[in-house]
Length: 104
Image (tube, rainbow, N blue to C red; front, side):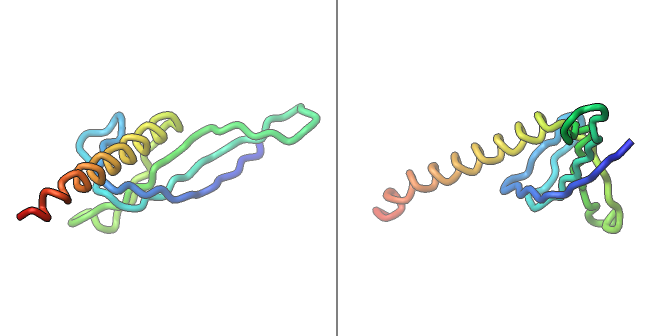
């Protein structure tokens, strides 16, 4: 079986919860590892995703630890979408308050 891995980075601007895990992770940039397998028997090259992991670095007394947390592509997209909506809501809320602050 032929497999390949690719890495990318995602940035969260707010603390977020990963589905299936307790607690929240802090805002920051996280590495995403995707593993795929080559589909055999086709007349063209095609790959199927077999796993996706969010790489989480430990903090505090767990500073040297690294966890590879399995996450589905759907859940990753959901968490990123929620982060984007939260960021936009905060940005627009602050913009709405700006004119009032000028009156003080």
